[in-house]
Length: 276
Image 1 (cartoon, rainbow, N blue to C red):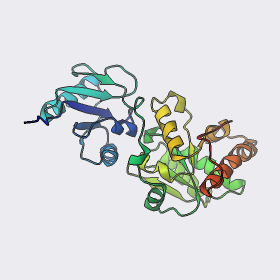
Image 2: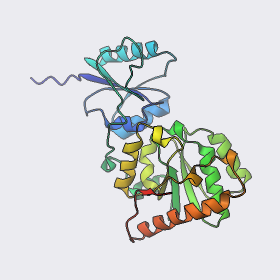
Image 3: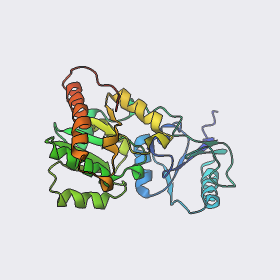
């Protein structure tokens, strides 16, 4: 008789590993998500099966105790941690330690199609901007809305999608109302990676190069055929805005949007990364 007992517990610290860590576990391995319930829901949605969830404790030792308890409860023999870097997140854990998210190529085929993702967000034919990130908390919503406002100033009409767990989201929505922006903003409370196919242009966060999932995300963007804007003007924080910013945005953003329109209309292919 074949033993189907899982052998590895995948412990995902959602704050560091991000949603791309969900692509690592095998079909039968149990998964423990340390983080908010919304983090667990997102990972569960990406995996297509239930996961265990526990609040993220303050100490590494407590994290290890929670994971060890889950390991025993599921009958797993080892624990594989998915976290930023390769260090052990706490004493007492057994088995291997893995960076997880920086070693996984995200299978675009496991994500919704562009049409399905756009329908889920209530989007029509407008060009959609979205951040390229697998950790929603790494997204600065205020900066994305500021960029949206400047794009409106130069006469473009777009929509923007943001994860519900993004930083400064309340401030961003206050800005959206106060500035009278007409670009619709869609807030995604489920798995953020599932919303990325809806985008026409992806904006890399300022610290994208320091993100262990950066190479996987850029490969995903390439697979989906979505250009990634990496120019400095797209990255400027709203708090550091200058009078020259609209001109800079016009010079760098407009070509990106035109490439996105061309690709969507069946024209020439769009490079995955738009050079500065």
